[in-house]
Image (cartoon, rainbow, N blue to C red):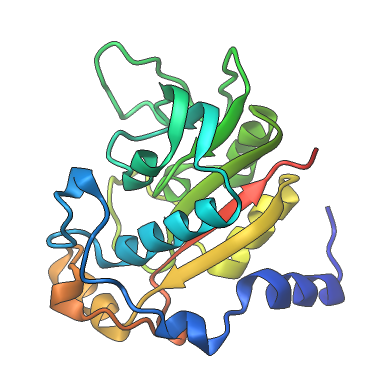
Length: 230
């Protein structure tokens, strides 16, 4: 798929560029994630804003309920906010080993049933061909179904050698459009303190170490909610 410069600018202005009010939205003191014991403490700082955006978006589009949810990690906090009749854990690479769980590569997987919603956070950077994988995910979602992911924009190498890419918000948007999805929302978070901290400590600090403020030019992670056209 080829995009003109005008089309790229249209996508950026419509889905990626944020009003200043977005960066002024506070991260609430109360954490809604039960599996995190309702605390942001010791959680990777960008994931706080990601969770809050996710909750807002699923309510906005009335998609908190579904029949079949696919996901790639039990640790994803977003799973908690989707009321699915059936859930299927799908391991995304050969390095993960969980007893009694089906194991397939996201580049090639082909489930028996089509998903209403598919969530795979902090995964694209570990896929050697992200477009191939997103196209495959597109095939496994029902028409009118949804996909959500979050990815690092700036990060330390981790899980090497299975660490291949980082994505800017615009790059993430173009990736999903190229695979056939319609973008509904994009989000981002980062600040200079966080970026300095991850490279100086080779860890992932929480908001109490780096602050809650969201700096547009210092994006560290971004995320996207998309829909498969009907």
